Image (cartoon, rainbow, N blue to C red; front, side, top):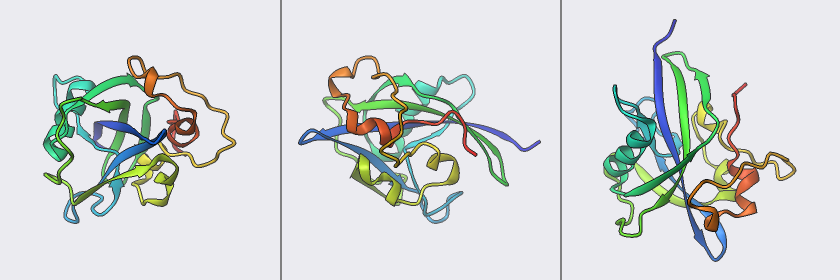
Amino acid sequence: MDQLVNVAIGVLVEYREGQPWVLIARRKPDAVLGGYWELPGGKIEEGESPQVCLAREFEEELGVVVHVHDALAIIEFEYDHAHVRLFPFYCSPAPDSPAPRNLHVAEHRWVPASDLTLFQFPPARRGALIADESNDVNPRPPTGVSRLWSSPLNPVLCLLSSVS
């Protein structure tokens, strides 16, 4: 069996003029799956919770301080090099967080949630992006960020329970 890699990923949402924008980052060219865009996050270290991992990874990769909110559906995907289990969470920027910087990523962008499917994500993370506006999946608002919840985000960022 391939190596199991547990990874925490964050959907960091910021609202601009009432529309949800999501922070994405591009992997460095020499990294595994280099050049792909991704929702920020990283490998969960032994003894570390996914939430703690995610806060650490945002700070290490982008210099951003985040609040980690409710977990979304776990995504599993089999790559040639490893079996990946993604633990996704909605996140919000901490009020005193600095602006994102490219510390351990090639680049980053805030993009409208409706444009996420225009970027090339690794196959496992593409499972996190749904472009079909007719999708009837309606996840509940994350605890603590219900004031940020907006219906335009629902069909774009619903996380799938599996990737086919």
